[in-house]
Length: 125
Image (cartoon, rainbow, N blue to C red):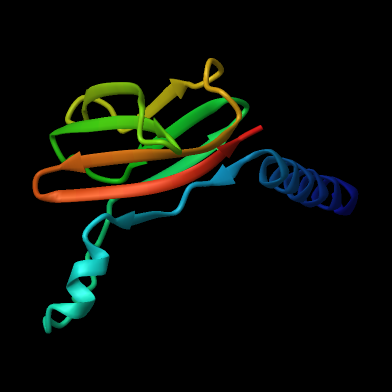
């Protein structure tokens, strides 16, 4: 019994660290941050029900709650739109985008829904 528990725990941690080594989180921030700092308004924390991950030439978006229709676009470092898609978060909560055709370098993911505009950056090697 003790060997089974030790095996299960070690297997869990092994798989956990393998997943961490292959996935890269894409931090998201509001695209309107710079103006808010100088305008005299107090910044308020906003809950973003979304996380993003870039792994194996795929971008994953994971919504914790429904936000309705959402526009997702990928731009290169020069601002050229490489991909644009409208997704419906009322029907699904996890979305994967194949980015294997992107050139290497810095890219931006832009996500907008309602009045919220988010931007994240990631590197393609």
